[in-house]
View (tube, helix red, strand yellow):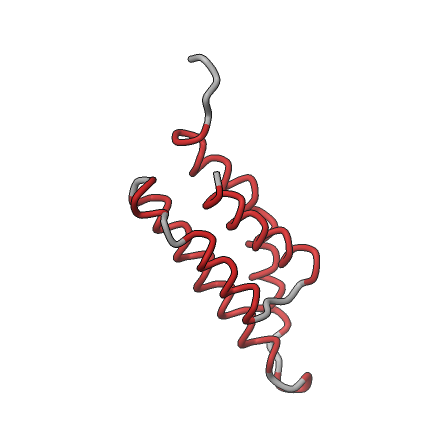
Length: 100
């Protein structure tokens, strides 16, 4: 559950603040580092995509206001807003302990 919680905490913070800090990225990477020992490749692919898009959002919001591409930033933020529910789908086979 720690991997899932670390990832969803990262996603929720981006949705709440509309930005990504290096501390947040570091925390997410630390909290999800054991994914490859616990989950299938689809979880790793998902975590990598979240990381890459998070770094893109961070880079885009770090440039001066007049140089920013707000359309792309909004696309990224819209994508992040859908990822909490996507995370549930990706992790569900591994952490859903309800009876079938």
